[in-house]
Image 1 (cartoon, rainbow, N blue to C red):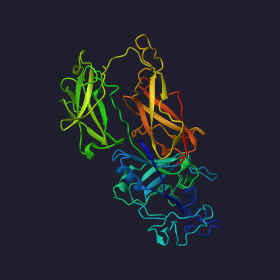
Image 2: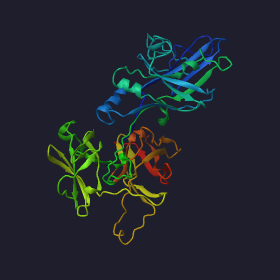
Image 3: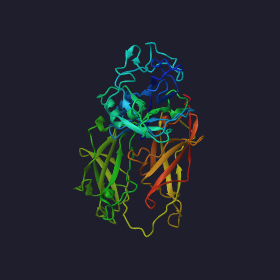
Image 4: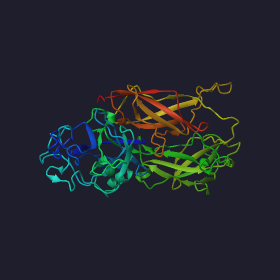
Length: 497
């Protein structure tokens, strides 16, 4: 699981726009329960110099992110956070070629219960809710239109005007998590140079940037509500099933192999002896079968130092890994296999399964691979509130058994080094989790000796719908990802309990 979404717990639109009579401004109006949010600037509607502005404020439960970090549901570091808001179509004039700023609100505010976004009739009267001049009840903003920190400020460009907003806000979220800033949420509005008070076109004339609308947290459309999305690379590549000897043919980084160990106690991952500082040691033995034989073999750690033991690293609660390289001199025709043994203070903790090393080699052709695949543990239905693991079975399409292999009921499960998944709602083909193969690699698949897999937080999907799972493999021969011609159905239903 490398994606976690947090829904807004408050949002509102605040404005100083004129009411329909073009005499009274709606600075006391509240729109906290409206199903859309909007930002605009209107110039010279009431007079030749009048300006009218609308801004968005919204807040997310940072305490939930802290709790998930403490529970190691998301890692302590290496997480990127994105504010995502989704365009709401409307019949009014839509601005083009503009920028929106995303800022940190610097004082507390209340959402309120107003709905009217046309006549601005839902006034707070110094009661519950924020507006253009008051942050909550009778408490005034220091500056009308909201109080904001000077930094950080994020900007998003809108060329056509109807794009969604997606901004990396990691620096600000980390400040909230570290309590160096109080979490009062985000402010979203037109950049200062685009707000009507200072906007000019190239000819020097001032003009308006009309209404940009986003869906609010109260929208009936589940996937269009604003979210704060945590993304990280949770990929675990266990080379037990594709262990390669070092070779001058390969770059140094690709001569490294990583082995993982999981400490399950009564079905739950637990740190060794309950201590996060208890780190095991890996020894590698040669073998003629599945039993370690002889003395611990020498190999090289990630810094290329020759050792016959290697301290592992703790990745998360009860999960450990060791990275190293090994030369073909580690084995012989008598002992063609390797076995990993994990110890602590000289006492054996765990003996791994047999490893069959492979050699890097040249190829006399440029492959164009095709595959047969299946999600081998796919269920008829799923429910929200849990995390599910999906495991792939993959083989090359042209696999053909001969007299030597026909006795095997199924061919070896092929490991795909770089694979990514995407999830689409079947009813309207809306992409709800896009391929994430960039810097955060949030949808990349892991693998171990049993094949490729990924974990999915089912709360990312709305219940009552069927979704389509698609997979894309990176093809070095094409220098790009290629989507595979298979679609797997995922049905999410309401939990009956």
